Image (cartoon, rainbow, N blue to C red; front, side, top):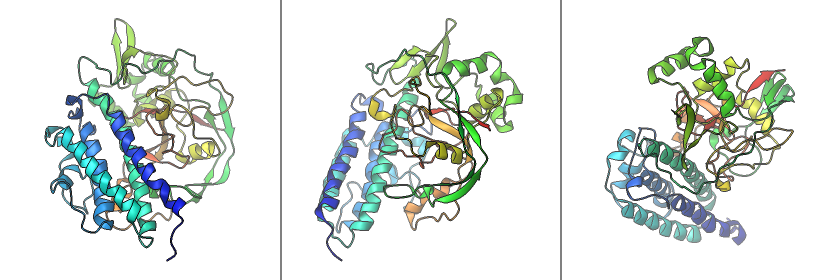
Length: 421
């Protein structure tokens, strides 16, 4: 096999270090105590995220491609495997916060150990294994970026359980501008293609590219705002079963929902917990931390519907990935800027769709444990699109499919409405 050009390989050590260093930079505002807490089964401790991302590189790259590689600790595979049944047994998800040991310093040493060996591997790997290694490396880097987003999401949830409502960072900017007026963008029906195509990285669940038929439709120019959602609440939206799916209504009653997650009414005024601490509710910002059930109920109340994921992707194709993503440093949704077209398709909030998370026609699971990354979750979850204010800008694309259970609210999830043409 001919040797690969140096420029095709020289970029990867820096790309690897940039992602790894970003994870640690996100943890810089934390105290040692902050790294350990887990306020709900779905919200992992910060130190677990740091360790799990390292376990991924250790398990799927170092132990496969570096001869004689010695694990940092023989039991870390059990502690930091997330859900890969083919790899072996793993510590229960809901008990990750029970572990005071290994401590944060041990986790940092673990990351340094993995980084040292990964850089050696990237520099010395032969051309015979490089294509397969690069494929796994890209998955690993994107996987760590997913956990950077989860890290921020989980820090917010874990901090919200503290009566002091501490801020992750007290220097996060606020915006007082008005949201752009909402208007409707007409999009054509017919046969379209969706799914990843061309070069660049994509997850297996974005493939294969395939044709879909759509009726003509209209998409709201921006997401629903806090003020618009408050009107739904004030009109008794949470108390009227006519707007709710049966499962959604039962869930809302069981969990006593009366507002989005992190909203609190104090002295007759609404406030919202953010990564910058408690702040007055900004009515111009996109509503955030609402479940699929709440999004669907709001759409029914408004006389509209949620877009399908195919409609969303067709609307987003050709748009530049830019906006209020993690790189902006705001870490909170911002009011829609002025504009005549589709606004905030990327960033701010993940947008609920009406589409269940399922395989595309022709989808095949990857061989081995990596086949468990996405495919085995294609049941009972709903697709979200577009990224959020905690998503890395180089991580998201038009074909990207996020997915969560319809009752979950701790993610940065919002609403964009659609209607038939």
